[in-house]
Image (cartoon, rainbow, N blue to C red; front, side):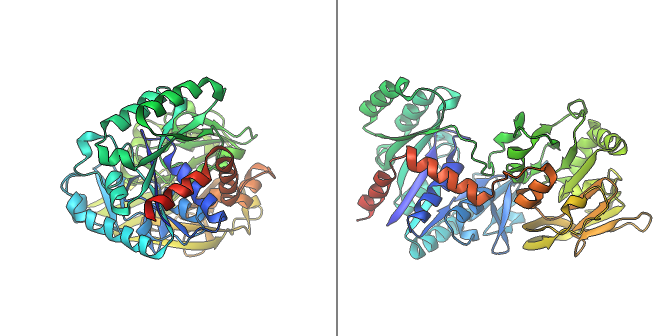
Amino acid sequence: MGALMVQGCSSSAGKSVLTAGLARVLARRGVDVVPFKAQNMSNNARVADGGEIGSAQFVQAIAARAFPTTDMNPVLVKVNHRGSDVIVNGRFEPEISEVSWVDRTPFVSVAVFAALDRLIATHDVVLLEGAGSPAEINLWGCDLANMAAADAADAVVLLVVDIDRGGAFAHLFGTWALMPEPWRERIKGFILNKFRGDETLIEPACKAITDMTGIPFLGVVPWVDHGIPDEDNASLNGAASGGGDLQVDIVRYPTVSNSDEFQLLAEVANVRWVTSPEEITTPDLIILPGSKDVFGDLAWLTANRIGRRVVELVGSGTRVVGVCGGLQILGTRLSRESQTVEHVMGLGLLPLETVYGPDKDVRSVSVTLNTDPFGAFSELAGITFEGYEIHVGETRRDKQGPVRVCLDGNLGFEHGLALSVYVHGMFENPQVLGALTGRTDVRSLSQCLDDLADTLEETLAIDTVLSLIGEVHD
């Protein structure tokens, strides 16, 4: 059929979630559809083909019932304390990472358009997602993710705006007005997203915008608790309550990574993201998530005394879980070599030492938790979950202290009230979430995607969208 692209008037307009929902809608109609985002800036990544892609494109592939590949997100930019790491075709490229954003464009564009060509050649529909806004006029010369990708795919464009923020109609008209005429012609529909209220109140404004631009509104999507992993980390701002009895505090470091894996947990527990020791009061569980810069984030934990607060609470009976970088932080010592050998002390809650080397582990895994059946995490014993590793460093037991290996291959450790795992994905497993919270109404990711697709079927003119794709490519 062709290509369809979801662009937004801003970041956090809901592009990633709507793209995932549309992918599931099309897949349920028997369409061979795959996602694509030319260039993504996010510390939330998943494993595809043994390489890294943005979490959003991984979830969109699952929504499309397609096997995730690095072609779906050929360029991923991950931010750290020093700048950014550029991942091209799933692999870290240190030389490109040292080049400025503008100057790296010629190097990465080859990978971007080659990947897009491969997807177009092998699938009926490529569902593209833009980045930020296509009207960032200062970036037009190096913006591969918006209209450059739309032109390369000859895509129909749907422009999405977050109406919950206010100013939605000005955003739509301003974005359209800034574009040159050939780009305007690609936009075939507007979508209002995250709407709460009486739709009749916005009908006059929709008509006025259509009269001024010639572009129809193809739907008003309501605010929904979709449960889809959040690419933009918007859920990190303030508390996210699922109304559950379990109080969970997750530490938000400056370069937190893979924070999206706690989205489903927030549906069934009372989750708070914390950035100061005063915010951590009396949680039932503390989580130290992944980190893009473990040494930098550990220094931050020490400086603002969150690390000390975590140790105090564990000492008084609170459970703690470390994931990936959080595993390393819970240990006793971390070491790495640059010009000199650097040693730093962890929180010391697990007798573990992590040594950094040149290699990065990136792989999908299936693991079974072997926690102590009589210990603090006995409810997790025997649960198998699918997950992925993305980390630098190897961790081994410190001979000076006892610790239980709870995931084979030194991928997980347990001692007392502390549990740590290298494998991401544990908190996306319904059985794990049910065991931790006592809830029986835990949705799987697939259920969340189907629920979202049901909403889009009810609120968007899906048949019109499909006909638009066909018209452009007939």
